[in-house]
Image (cartoon, rainbow, N blue to C red; front, top):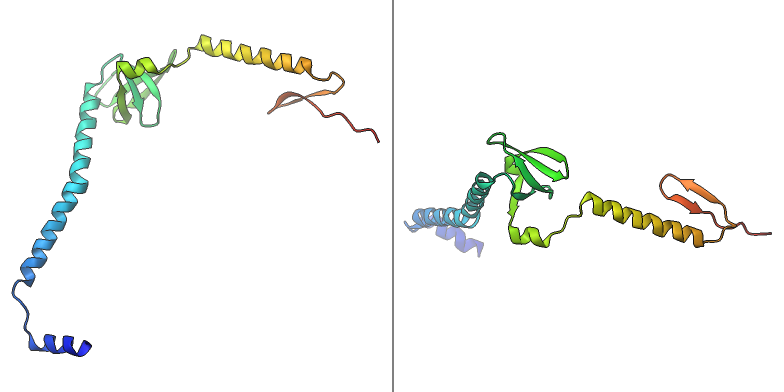
Length: 158
């Protein structure tokens, strides 16, 4: 088989369309690459720029890092001040906004207030104190930095 290829190359009989077909294949490859990769990315970038431009005070937004916050102030075109908790404001670069939360989505999400969080902590403390009162009083209690108060196992008699 190699002998036949050598003979064909030695004859110098090549078709004249080889240059054009290679060029057309290259153009087709670039067009496919453009429509599959570059154009969708440009559309997403344009949508993100429109989103960032439409943000106003009072909007609920999500940052790229996943922080849900409310827009408090827009000092300039590149910065934005967000309130991430009651009284906690942080300055972000405007382009880090991932998307806006609509009114319907905001109604379904519930973020507990500091009062609700405090009441939940109080409930847990009372449950823990009731559980420790119900345990055997003969075992000594130690304090650990990580675990809090806990009872040591009873020593075995020999």
